[in-house]
Length: 289
Image (tube, rainbow, N blue to C red; front, side):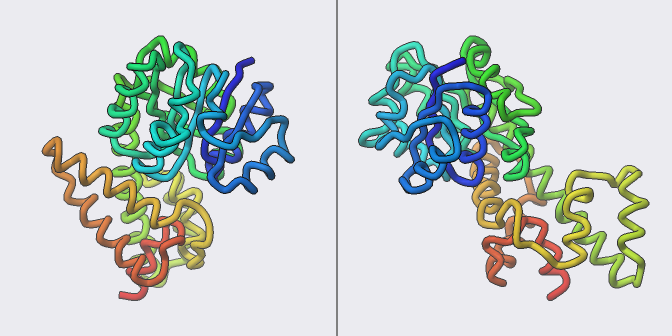
């Protein structure tokens, strides 16, 4: 078992840290809103730190899952950031979905202090975090990955090293491009079927056994038909992720016209007040169009 720290107890980090404690690791947590960290400590065998630096002190591995590039910089290299407490030889694993550029930036700063860095964004959403079945895409050295993977396994169904630092974030970008396209296709298919007067529950039951099958269809098809979106991965979060994709595409020259179009569709959902709706709410703009 390892001495670990977890920074950021949001909808993903809270259960992920819980799985680490359940696996028997010695866990110290930090969260910007202290009451949430106190609640976590009341539910799990762990302790709360006042700052990221204090959380990282004496930890063999430090994990984080925060909001964006700026949040990551703040908790790692800002005042009282984890860098102040990290010991040489430790490993920092970041589960934030952020840019590949910030991953490389943070990695360089930690490397100068003798600390290895792994960018490790996840897929699977809140339910995957709660059930400990996330997919984790990592970028870093083989040595650092070998140290971190047995601990990550506490909340992962799949965990793979995709390449050097930044490769984890680039893989997550591929994931989000594919997810956005599948949701838009599913939204159009369901909308078309409803307008055609089909029994869409029967349609879903049949086509889910064929080539159209997807996680989105299995887990979101029925709620899309019902117009329920008060759960899951929020539109605001998807727009943040797609923004990262579009910035990277502008840098590397990739052509992503569908992604750009669907990002615009999500902007329309935000204009409808659906900032916190699940990403499957793309169908709503078709209904209201």
